[in-house]
Length: 167
Length: 182
Image 1 (cartoon, chains in turn brown, cyan):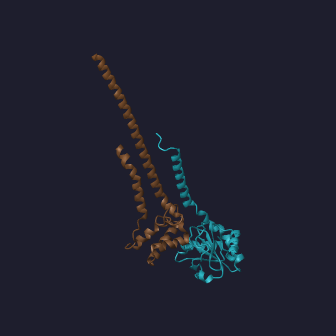
Image 2 (cartoon, chains in turn cyan, purple):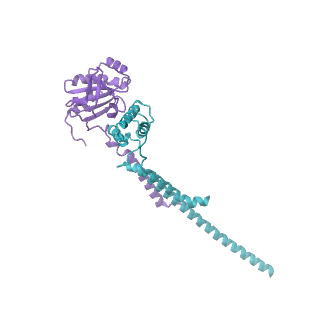
Image 3 (cartoon, chains in turn purple, blue):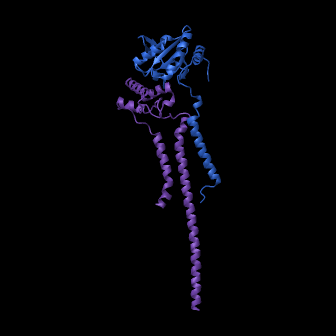
């Protein structure tokens, strides 16, 4: 187990970082074929309720969230796309209405920093484990050298004592 | 057991502080430029309301007038608090091409009517049968008030109960030609 941790674990954070980046970059699933109800629900979870504490429009029962869900449904029935509907709400409430900040401008930092943190953290952990492993090897080598020196001295003494007893 | 030397620790500390700083800037750094409403400086969203005496009232019919658009509800205590100031200000500006419009939202019409009977608004009060105007204007609560200039552009938004001084400030500002505010 100890050996496994030392040899495999340094790659694990890098693996997690790759998975995270791939998930961030993967295209969203197409909305085609979904019912108006499902699309309304999906879009309502992409919008924050302006009068609620940390709740999306989909989660809130406030009057405003009800109005917003009705408007989403109406606009979907009029044939508007998800992006057009989100743009409409942004034009009224600003980008803070979006549950996920759009990846543009300074917002890129919010998207990239967690990944960068994972990668840097992974490299840090890998470096830490590598150094621990190296140091333990060095310690083991010095212990075995000292042991060998002790053994040699012991054998010499035995040989000397045997010689003395023979003579 | 020494894993990192002093310079290594310093570099790691600088990287961590740098990442935290960038994250903080991304979250809070742009807030100083946030306007109270993204509608400010843009054309006011059009609407057609139904007044409490049954008439249609469209924003497009009011071009050339300065408009105070006040969102209220009968259950809203700050709305009661500002009702007197709105009435007094309307008396002052009604002959100066300034239109006051009260928009009742998230309310029972009977309660709204009782409210109007009690507070005796002389200016037009209406509601949106489609219940969309509150979202079109990005309302997050009541009272909220928009000041629209004679060209139909949203000049300001005020959140909370109005006083006569606040109304004077924003109405006079909306009546002046728009300056390029950066």
